[in-house]
Length: 137
Image (cartoon, rainbow, N blue to C red; front, side):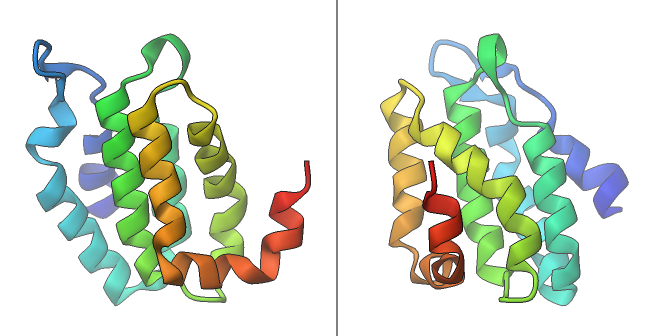
């Protein structure tokens, strides 16, 4: 159910309402995040695979979609609340480059959402042991 049905729902990169910049994903994103969070809450070992799958649907380059990127950053933030010290090293190589990439884009909404992740104490605590590793140029 999770891998075959829920995760592919992240794929749409179109806009439901172009004028108002409402991505198709926004229509059902909150219930989708809640459903995935329940799976991860029950079995945190699913988290690395779910994050990697979500990253595979991330819009990039010509396909970039600011509202969708903000939604995906929000989802990452929620799912990381279920990460622990044993699982985080598996997630870090996948998620941190994406967060850094989001900090480099020209759109302020994406940058602001990526920076907002640093206000989450749980995220910062998980990242502390790897600070030297991730802060190298």
